[in-house]
Image 1 (tube, rainbow, N blue to C red):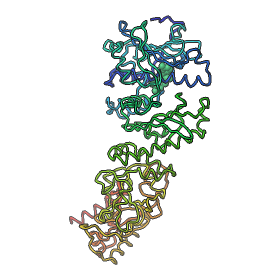
Image 2 (cartoon, rainbow, N blue to C red; image 1 turned 120 degrees about the horizontal axis):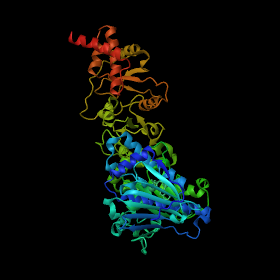
Image 3 (tube, rainbow, N blue to C red; image 1 turned 90 degrees about the horizontal axis):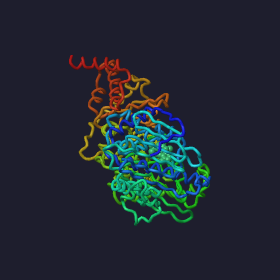
Image 4 (cartoon, helix red, strand yellow; image 1 turned 45 degrees about the horizontal axis):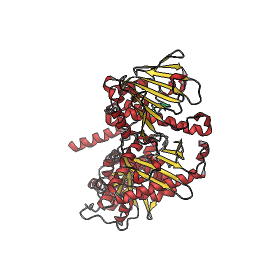
Length: 628
Ligand code: ADP
Ligand code: MG
């Protein structure tokens, strides 16, 4: 191997994150070392695609070598594996930027996640991530990268043993590819099989058969090459010719995930515009699902040329769908910015969005269990569409699934809900809050439970928003069980439900009025409740106010300076309340009771008593009385 240098080597330290990652690599958090080859081939293919794109505007970059190719060159004797491409290449500066840092957002996110949750540093987690170039150090004691950027008349060599520093050196043109990148792996003693034909061929067939660039294998540096992958675009092949493994392999390449696709959507749209679509619903939840930028993952191709992955082909609430769209109608030489505004892209966006939703609906209709899994993973994202995509709200409502007070842990659709409406039931009732168990046992739900009325339990943050948009379904509005008066009087109690003892209405009203005065401006009202059967009290939001959960959420985000005063609802049938109403003990005692009842309601909602000191004193007085 030639390592004559045409310039002085410059040594640099890796970014701290890279060092950490390298350390993990070398200590093999990956149980499956084979993946390094997928990563390097993937980079080579990306480089070829970048050149293909730049070559449209500047054909001179392609020179007399327009066909993209990837070569794998084995040298068993020297214990060396070389991966070479004729893609875009890197300048010395590029190398410093891209091979010394973790630019790639996925890898960075992965590192961040490890930093916060070290316990999860198991191979299962890392197995979901494509970890890129540095995986080479799992199998190599030294990695050399020779590269020449397309159109440049200089070449450089990057090298490192992966232990903390790397070196960049300008080299003679003869020592680098004419264009593109050559990655030379000096294999570790226990990784020498990666210089053998059998192993490499097996891995490429299994992992990289569908990169859109042909791959040639050279058994020895001077040997004749043999094609081991044809570089055909999988998405343009007829479905009948594609096996499940082909799809899985392709999925891993385009998503950089190592799991398997949950669903595959592959079709060709014909008509006004022609385009091919190959997209996947991942089998597991990707780590970046709730990143604030809510970035999509559909790559846009034009006649097999990769153009951009920033085209927002799908709405944000479908950002979990990954894959590509290849258009036959967009002009190749259109700038990425102009593509954004093109009517062709608009038609594609509309078409693909509709198709993804209809595929989901088909799955929901034909295989509830498989659909439940999709919903389990991505339902919280899909629900964002309920408030963002007015046009498709009906379709999304049909796809939505919920846990409820009567569902016993299984998923219910709105269709199921409406089919089980009680006579005289006028609304679709729901409760929001992050803890499903607490929701299911919250006092506000008692009266609904006693009447057999189903209450949807909504645990996701997004539920606080779409439910407030005045959406209804089959003429039934969504109504929070913690808001406004619950008009349940027209719906009879279910058989067997405890009927509260008839109250002395006059006496109870007297206590309500007393409590209201005693509590002053801690509440906006104190009233008799229809929604309570077992508990004595609960808090609800006033009719016109904001739902209490949403209010808490906004308040915790610092967005709501002043929360609206809640309504304290009191169960007139409750034995304690009846005794209180009847007692002729002094006002001091009743005042204590009123405050304690309010604090009890707050505690049931997962809040603190407003004044811990006063709470303790009142409780203390009461306990003394009880024992004294
Ligand atoms: P990713 O491919 O996700 O960006 P990698 O760690 O695999 O992350 O690669 C880091 C970067 O190094 C790439 O984004 C690219 O800029 C550069 N790179 C790696 N291999 C090549 C190659 N064969 N040709 C050109 N650039 C490359
Ligand atoms: Mg990569």
